[in-house]
Length: 93
Image (cartoon, rainbow, N blue to C red):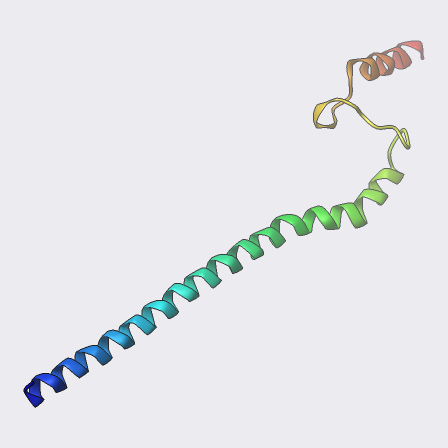
């Protein structure tokens, strides 16, 4: 093999190896970035819920009109029986 051709081939091989190393580093950084983004969004969405449950819920429950009462309907809305009881209490006064 001609020395000039061999030198060119070795240079191309070194460039290909360097290109492969850089592409792997880019791909690895993309995965770490994706995982970091997922973790950050989990924290951003879960932290307010946790803080509400730990700090605000006890304070809000102190000011509840009926302590210990829980609503059984969807989305925490009062049931029809509870609404009827409320209406009867206002009509009775």
